[in-house]
Length: 296
Image (cartoon, rainbow, N blue to C red; front, side, top):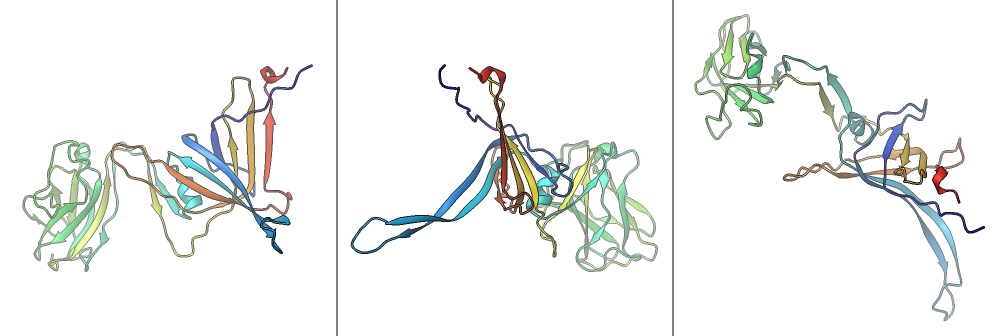
């Protein structure tokens, strides 16, 4: 009888973070460029006398980490690796506009703007972006948009000035009345009192046309904590049927270096530290599953 076939590891199939409390998954990373588990030791060498070589050496500590190169941006990525707060908006066939948020001054009040909304029958005109409304007199405003990424949605619009203004002329705000922001599907409604805005005051709101859902991700909130979790990584299944499964029981990760490069899909490295699990008395459980075709 000859030697057994060697067990090999090839490629990467997936990486799944899961909750340590109940073992339920957060989700799955499927679009991966690779993953590396590094268990590197630091040594204490004994030198003495005139000998240029160590008399003895002992392993001191082992640095254990898992670095995965990821090419997708699921919500749980931000929750686990940036301690972010994620809220979701359900899919909408008509689009979504957020409420007005005061920027400078008190533009959002009874003598200014009461609300912003979608103009009835003009849903197809909505254009993605963060919009800024600025009072240019006691009764008129200009509107700006911080991106032109969707300006061809519905009726084309364009910037009117280098300041990114989208209104060709100022819009008049009247008590309790709605005024259309031309060709955007947006309408602004005046407050309940006599309109008397302070020139230079601003307010903002965000727009998304018909969509399949929105995730709003708040990063850097005071008191946010990075969650310890487990992570299961699998190499690709080989032609022989061999599968390598690696279960990292106690993991903490931090940092997401998102790249925005010309004509390139974002790809970035997620670094996780592998910690000792006192309950299981280990950091990793690996399984080598031999396929039937790999047997001699």
